[in-house]
Image 1 (cartoon, rainbow, N blue to C red):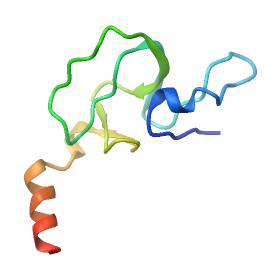
Image 2: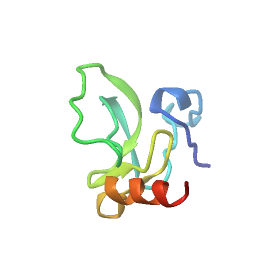
Image 3: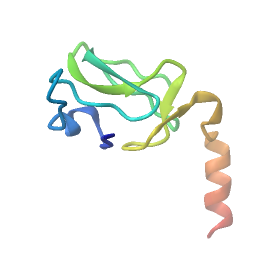
Image 4: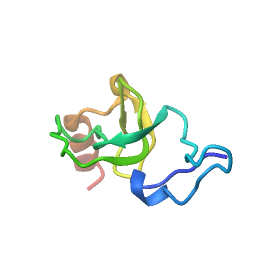
Length: 90
């Protein structure tokens, strides 16, 4: 069973019976003390000192968008690519 949610703290209710830890989706790892996720459409983010347990993207991965899946950083769309596709659709 995999649990997807917009943010790590939103899916904390899905726990495994054996470990008390939620099961993470592909390319995610469980952290007892995670700070924040990184997103493709955002630059470097300064994480707060808050300690939140939950599923976070593995190293070299970012969330495709808020609530999205973790994808390799190399496959993140560039901001200019997103902007040009939006312009073409209007």
